[in-house]
Length: 336
Image (cartoon, rainbow, N blue to C red; front, side, top):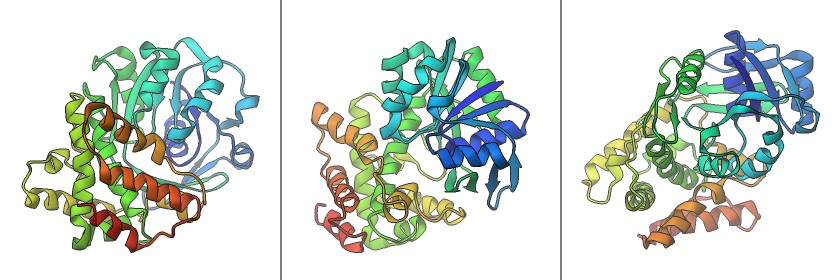
């Protein structure tokens, strides 16, 4: 297959490198000129506990790309979806499709721009980090799920799945991609809470003082999902059914322990959210990921005070008005 990978960072770089190594034709697009130059000069290197290899591939900045492509993997930050799509659309073949390999519900925005018939959903939960130009860390395997927005099984989803098995042998196709995406939002709310401190994901989830905060955040997201008719699905130790409002606390705690164990195994100890705040000093995906939860909650009459507070706290950290500290979790705990 021929792939255009729009966004060659942690997610796009890792998947694209594996596809190239498997013999697929892969072209990378990234707005980071240094990264593009490094790939063209020396290849894209994948490092970490899972594999060490380098692939040769062509890379372009958006303004230097030519041609049209049938299979485009969109791997940019959620807040950059709109601008990326504006640059991508001229390069999408008439029979082509865009796969949203991102966090959040970006499939809705993509479908608004190119149509549902040109949009494919995806859910990924592996651990990866952009290290430096031309070099990406693949730190931990995780779920890879593909699905048509309609739930149908189509020739293109079958071909895409077969190709991605070269990256993740346990990748699957689902007829309920929205269930995975909303479940990831619930898990994402918990990850944003862990990024309010400087502790690792596993250490945060292991601290009993804040278990009810993590449980409460997931419950808010899943209450909104339930009203919208979404049936969330489990992945990598996160079981959304364990965080439904009437679920016994012991079951919720068991799921938190499983999530903690999953994250302990990853070479990526902190979330990409934490890295955005503490290392790269840039805006996070909070508005694109948790903003819709608060918005949809208001729309359907489901209160989301914890989620709204996390959004405000993340903004304050982004603006330099608040440090990453345990007291931020205490503020959330006071809302319970």
